[in-house]
Length: 203
Image 1 (cartoon, helix red, strand yellow):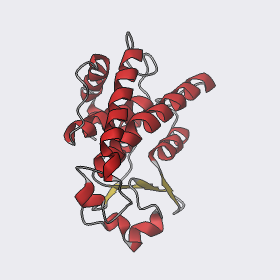
Image 2 (cartoon, one colour):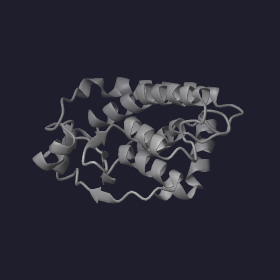
Image 3 (cartoon, one colour):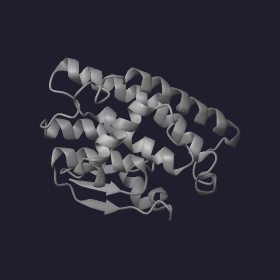
Image 4 (tube, helix red, strand yellow):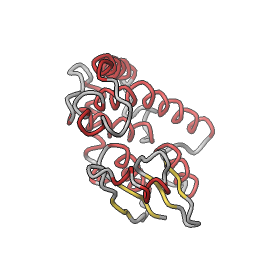
């Protein structure tokens, strides 16, 4: 396998996941600042032009971070980062989807349509007028999630999962692009600090 890697939180999620698994997956850098991810070589690997993209041993390609992480979990179930039982896996998938749709998407689009507009305006359709509303949605959902984390170590209780890794990467990203974690989100702040202390956070 080989992971086509680049700047940004999406590749970071997969790198942390791989590090937590203790897997050895070589990286090949794709320069998104030079728009190399939108050029023919990468579009043959991933027609959506996104990163990361995983090249499988048979030469085929897999993209989208949740699909890549699900695949890696099936290839190497231990330590489980999605779950060891149907119930655990369902819980992780539920929270991963909620975080993805309600926090990650509005946060990312809010960035692309404002601070990131010079980079993205010629690559994807941008709606600058929507930026403030999208950022507000992400902020409100972070506060909502924080309230549900009271008394928990991680999103799914005491087990680190893909949901936490996704949340971690995008909270860190938000803080770097003008969308800091709301001050009242002490539970998420503590979760981020727990992951910060893990070696995988350096991946």
